Each structure stands twice: as C-alpha cells, then as structure tokens.
Image 1 (spheres, rainbow, N blue to C red):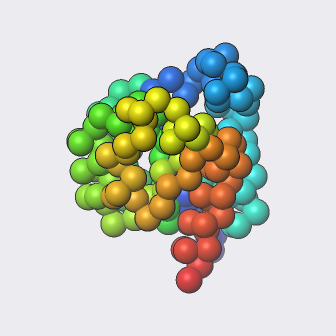
Image 2: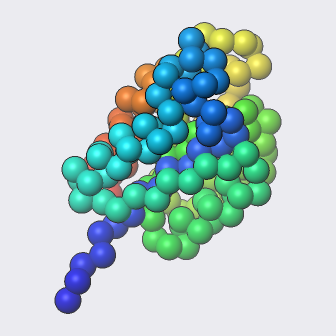
Length: 150
C-alpha cells in the first residue's frame, strides 16, 4: 500500500513570475524557478509533497486557496504581491480556509513606500515574514511542517 505524503502549497501573486528581471535591487536575482526549487528542497526534507502556483489574477489565487484547503493541504505559503495591500476578497479567502497560511514577502515591505506598510491579508494568516528574500519562503515552510507534525 502506497503512502501519499501530506502536501504544502506555495502561492505566488502578481509579478512574481518576473523575479530575477524585476527590480533586482529590491527583489534579488533569484527567479521564480529558484524560489520554487528552494521550497521543494524544504518540503522534501520534511517529507511533504509540494504544489507551487503563480498567477497575476486575484480569482485564481482565491480558487487555489480553496482548492488547497479542500484537498487537505497541511499548510499554505502565500506571497500575494500587490494584492497584499488591496484585496479584501483575498483576505476573506485566507480567513475562509481551515488551513494555516503564512504570508511571505521577499522585500521588507515596512522599509518601502507607506502604502506597502499595511497588509490586508496578514491578519488572516498565522504569521507573516518580510525582507528575508528566498529564506523567508524556507522559514515559512519549515514552520508549517513543524506545525503539521504537532
């Protein structure tokens, strides 16, 4: 009988497909493929399967949050990109799922423009990480793996 490992999900919002080319002084030189590979390493280290998806579309992110919850995900990492500061609908979707969600931002949003200082989505998450680059994703996944093990 085969055992299906529990799954962690990583959802990337708008413009994250431009990583490595988009404002490298702010976001670094890692590409989205690099971020996903780092996430896959952490998930595998902890015995989890991983689903990574990216969309510039708010509705797709909301649908994937629901899909992850309905599929029994152990946890979700989300980088909502610009929707962090604008999307009540995305915040409500995070709040609607019975799965721990951690918000991650590559840059330190608190050291940037004032409109980036407010996250509509973070309050619905179990935690938020900003400014650690790719390491923020790794830290979020390690946290969710430990949470699922408890």
